[in-house]
Image (cartoon, rainbow, N blue to C red; front, side, top):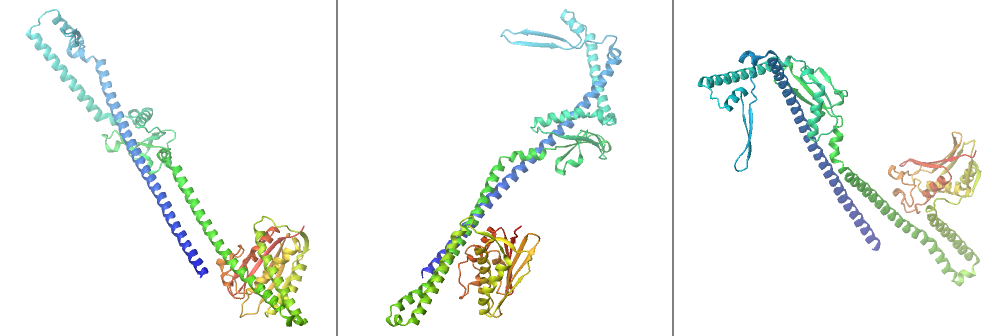
Length: 520
């Protein structure tokens, strides 16, 4: 009843662990997804702001260049007018001074004001002197200003017509000087807070690069990092030129906005790793606890039989009839002696557990001939194999078999492997055991122990050397043990500087392979 309750408790505990594991996993995954989604949105918004700012800057650059071109034509026409003395030809020999006269005065309330009278200074001076011009003079003056207006209007129309008709014929290097373009780009980008290096080029309608900055490379810019703006968009389609700009450090600039999220993401990821590691350790500890419980159950069963036999023999010794029979006394003595040895053997196996908690076992190393030692073991074990109708063969082909080992532990290792072969034999097939040695390379000795037993499943094969682990197919009524034998074998071989591995197939057999260094 108590055992059943323990199993229910273990099962409930396992279910609880799984529920907590699933909930924690969902929580961590959800947290990571939220962080990734948030970072993705920030990057997307940052990229859109960056693209919008760059396009706005390029439009502003194009407008600056158009204004510069208009200013160029205006200055050109003004200079030509001044050089040809149009004013003098149109109005007379003397060019009128149209700057006017400026007056400054203060009102009675204390307000200060400026008054400017624009026009010919000579005419204004006549007004100042009190000379009243005639009506004809006013009419002539009015006609003069009207003619000036018509002339200025015609001049502006000529400039606009000149820009429309001949501006596109100018070389692009004059219309948009590279230094001016770079200066405008830097100015507009800095104004929008995009303080980062850039590369640019000006290309014609066919895509041919007319000039470029020193580091401009088309291959260095991806599709989302190349920004294009038409220069002088009012030109004919075939004469259009384009300004191409890309930013080598764009990704660094974009992702700098989420740099504060990187530590949070890293800490969350570390917590996830710690959580996974904790769950793995918890399951391992739980599995170890279950194996220890099985070990205690097996140990109790193993101790119960010899103790019962010794107790029964002790009760028989209390019988006067038995004490009077020397033969019966001898038999009881033999039973007590055999069961005591059996009990001592089981106690020694239990004491092996303490050995696994130490890093090194105290070994008495000496040089022995492995072929000779294995041959003696085979001869001793032959009777036990033949008892079950089997046969054991020794193929000791190693020419050099001198190894530096602890003879007692080395013997125990081979005995453990042979004993396992007998325990896990097949009932429908006579046992066939083979022990072989051969040299591997110049400094290695290989020892193999092979049988034709029930075999080991692939999932169990990688766990058979674990402490307390017992293969499920071996839990038969006539096979007892603590799951320490193969763990002891691996520890001994490892401490002796060797390696051990296993190969097995169900219902075909198992082969253990030991590699030990030879004595130089």
